[in-house]
Image 1 (spheres, rainbow, N blue to C red):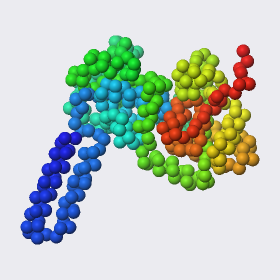
Image 2: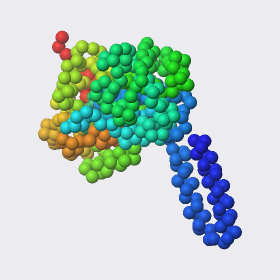
Image 3: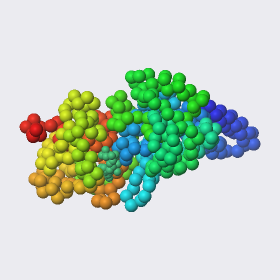
Length: 412
Ligand code: GDP
Ligand code: MN
């Protein structure tokens, strides 16, 4: 930053001198305008969000190695809170995607989807790509790369984090040509920077001068997202490209007027996940409706796999509530169009969804986020991302099967 300001200052002085000289030799004033251009070019670099000076407070880096987008987003909010608590710059990891028909995993830079200027309103960040292009050489040279894990991870090496063992672990670090020189097991330290003074403890145990980069094998965060970090969603907003894409999709495909967005999470993996519903108080993102201490109710089957009649009933209610003229359906599997068009035919609403087979998850997320009313799946972290984004904007949302109707208790 300082270098940048000096550069701008010097350019202005230089331009002034040149302009003076031009005046002396009587060149028209317009030339001066062209001379200003380099400054206009340098300025955005200076006020940009990525700092090319190493952060003396050090960095937090991690592999979002667990789950797909929703899980990674939960982990991201936690890691952002953690980095702030330690006062270290957060290295924004790419999103790890698993595309059908392709083996392994694909790394998609963080800012391909989200606006990093917005994230940096909360805390200092650099993208992983920027870090390795501009900072790694001086801050984290090969030979001094330590991987951090809570305790030993199984793998080829004994007493090691085995940070690169398996997919996506290996491909993730290989993308940035990272090999680890040793492991550091930090257990029993906690990620909870809000209640256990973890920030101070971490920095005492791992001072930035000796440990400039804390590179975690997995996110330094919990799943589902810790309650204190839910509000950080405010700083995770889609970039202009995705906002535009969503806006255009709605404009091109939906009739003008309010619409209800629904998330139908119903693939085969989901049925399997929902089998765990009876064995605990919480499943995945369920605290988002039940409360973190079940203060709003208990788990039951319809929260996970709502019945047809529940879905129809709730859509009808939502349509009336906002005067919707259309329904936008997002799903990973079954859009239920036949059933819905039959049951909703008297409502006079049209049904819309992306093309089956190649619907883009982030386009669904962005469209659902801007609907006039949203009904999501309380168990799903994909739904949770939408719900949190809407809460930031003050937009209304509901969940399938929530609150639980009084007259339909499970048989004991
Ligand atoms: P969760 O499993 O529901 O908690 O959410 P995750 O995001 O972890 O995993 C579900 C994944 O399935 C998503 O990341 C998407 O790739 C896919 N998926 C789920 N629901 C939808 C949807 O409505 N639309 C699209 N396009 N993909 C979805
Ligand atoms: Mn998942």
